[in-house]
Image (spheres, rainbow, N blue to C red):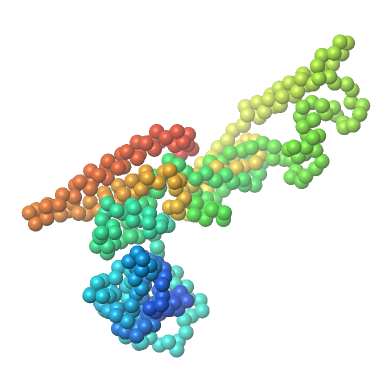
Length: 405
């Protein structure tokens, strides 16, 4: 259940926890002068009237904007419905934005002389949670538009927002990142020849919303060199450039290394710079060829003590790197040009899940609605998206890493 559902469920048995939760939120207060009500905040009404001292939960954000029809809220005229916690305003209109957690009478019965424990943290020792994917209200409404939102209130749907996100939107996000993963490359400590390694799947401090689902290890040579700076070792150093070009091919620096010429000269029987560089490159290629011929690598994902690791070894040592393929729990990370297709896939999942429930009711004279069209619409949306993704060049390039399409 989400946070609001949890707080509503303990209203009768443990109203004190609601009070402590409001205290942990900073004891926010609202009056007729309040212009901004943030989503998922808890506040107390201070205006005289039926709701004075009531603890209210803000279900949806409300910003006062008279020019667009969002008038200031007059809490003095607000009415309460004790059983379901609804808030009524002018002419008995139910507010979709607010819900009562504690009525004034319930609040007055709480012993305020007992302070909230210093170590109290809301929602840590219970099953209250938010959805697994972070998505803005605007994007959620776009996805849920074909379900009737905002014409229908979320309370009128079979599932609430968090459940829709978890069972409809998250599977679509998983499919998207299965085709188009976020790539994070990570260097881990060097390993020696035939040395076994275990690298645990983990979170990333620089990218907290990323969740790795596949690690591809690879080895690079040249790990034995030092990391301190020295003269002539910089990538753009003049001496380094001269050395690799063959002008410093002797065994010592300075003078006295013999003569080299950049082109053939009559009477010279040595090597030209071009010959020296060609021999040097061929020698390095042969050396690397021997290493590649004798190298053997092994890697697999393993589970130890309920933790997942990339496990492997290589017959040649070097620098171990992990090519992490990740998904993100933040909907905003989806590439802008991919949003239309991801929205379609989310909508298809939502239509199919709600159609499965509604199709349990057979159409009749009193209920002529045929919900099978929701299934047909879902299939059409999904098929178009998945066909396009399965042929995308980027998705095909990563097919081997994923284990095939």
